[in-house]
Length: 319
Image (cartoon, rainbow, N blue to C red; front, side, top):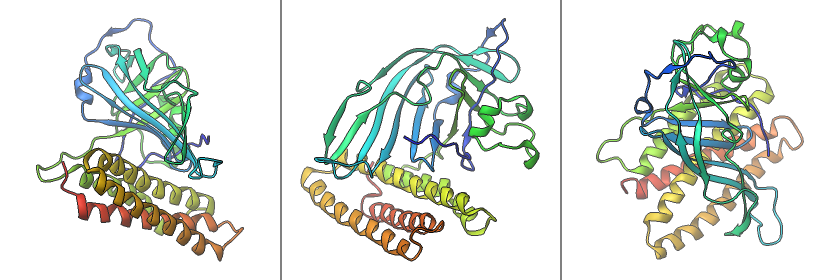
């Protein structure tokens, strides 16, 4: 599975920490209640993997890790391989390290399926994994907004896009930050806008994907980027909308009657085949060239975004 670093998406709340900890810890002034409703993500758009995490006001948490390799197929699983981990647990109470930093630990964590288990579902091979980003975590550091960037670990900064502080006007962390000290891995997060009473789950997922992808789309269209950077950012664009589509699909599985879901599944299979064929056809003119991934990613992104909004039109007010 790929393990590539990414620039955090604009508008996302960042989480990080420090490498060292003061030996005298005071009782926390911050509580988990302040993080209620914030969703955290440790992800790589280029690598198509992410760990998504929600913390509740009592310190409990739940999340999902997923990665995919659609090219890794075989007998019985022509649709490829999906790496998956659904998990939940409890954090210890946060303790204050200094004016910028809090620390907490994982008191308990459970996985829905044991790591290493494999099974084929709907012609896809599921490989159950550990929660990447939280496995081997001994301490998690929380940095507050306003923390000077220059005191943060390089390992954290690289995860959230600060590869070279001389190339940014930022001097302090504009958001929260979560950092797995032992594994040197950093989460980013966002707080979704509250929904109106009329706005359903499917509409919210489309709105979230649109918010996340807008700055990336602008960069791809207007920024002076290398071909490699364009390829990576276009892959991130596609992944944002593909993730949204997958969340919507899980929601529909739970809410549509079996007959409607069977009909929609057949339609979806036809759509997937058409989407992939379109991307391959557009990429043929650049076969073997450095632009081929960009061309194919943009087709996949646009077709997937269109599909999400088709489902919004049909089912957007399901609660």
